[in-house]
Length: 188
Image (cartoon, rainbow, N blue to C red):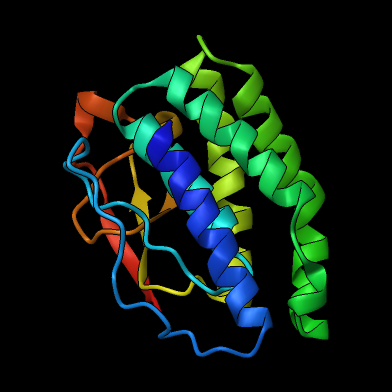
């Protein structure tokens, strides 16, 4: 929880620095986490940075079959949507954001409200992932992401997600088939 609060605080500081005309290379140090062997989401000056961070925390929780952490990350995403600064977007980016905001926020709310029902969380994560992909394609993520596909999810209909690593860590099948999937696209 301390890492989450620290990440949010650091993201907020970077957003403030960006709005004050400083360069995005103001700090080259990234917070590290000895408690977590996975790569921590990097703080960004991108307007969607906090949403991306929360999304990646949600994805990581689902890969570990952790419905409680997924619910926490879903609730944090709702807060990030509520605090999102649309003024920093171009008109084209604002249109994409406005198109996805309501649906994406609703899916994050469902994930947050359904600790104890990971399959239901994963159903909402599927659509949330589509919305976040559209947002990242328009606004960017402030870092390299990978758009990844699981062909077996939902009775072989498949589903996609965004990841901060090229290595497959499947949020739809969790620990049962953690490496099922392929990278479809690199997003810079």
